[in-house]
Image (cartoon, rainbow, N blue to C red; front, side):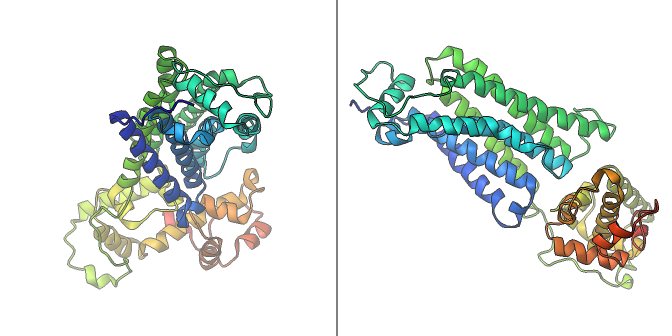
Length: 402
């Protein structure tokens, strides 16, 4: 077997950075309390899939694959993971749940994974020829007797077309989901509000460009020789996601290092806020909570809410105490419990379990949801669901949206 020297250039470095960053993001989204949120799990698996696919292209492009022939085509089944999990991410970010019959979307992945056995479990000589065919057609093939028939589905020659179709369909479905969410808020797809939908729209557009990049690149190169350009575009998507994560993080914002706690009203009697400013912030708060429902976001914090209202966390905490006689966490619980009561009462959501409702209204912990619900309503969620027969929705928490 002829072995080519390792080749490193700017494209190789870009791909390597993409692999490392996607791996980091995947682990970040799937671990800790973040991993309890459905949308985080979806984007986490999406990032790990991108990392594996980009990593294989990096190995092939740099000739490292000559030294790791056992890994030839190891990531190919993941081509059918990217589209579905990105769609799952968008749906779960908007609806707080996966689409119905979501498991059916993974059937192509399962079929291709089963088909992968017929070429992953092959002698090294077979894999060497396969690598040459894709990246070094100028070199001579060697004799090889496969252990198994190479492709029992007869579809492997159409992997590029099937990948293109999968990504195109799911990118379109994701963008359609985002457009419908904008419309439910009486906005167009290109609006800048609601704020939480804008990153989803931008990521969906970037993913929609992915199959278009494949269309532009593949006809220009023999077999897989142009895949490095596709991997570089994947790296751009990975770092765009990283930027969104950093923009949404409270770590880089100026805020107190200690938790905000409710303080007596008298502490704020000499407030620097004018009455006009207070009214504007309170009006904006009411409008925001009704139109965008940020309280459904599990990671909503006082600094994040204050940023959306163009005020400081200190001033917002002050207003909540002065005007509503509530702390931020009291207000958040009241809105979430009110939303939960609607879900428990709505016939369309009677099939949801209590823990699913807790997750939908922004709680990562079912026990925390039970505690807040019992404190505000005097009942457990199960008791409320069982005994609710009239059309009212709130009890002691009704003042939250007043």
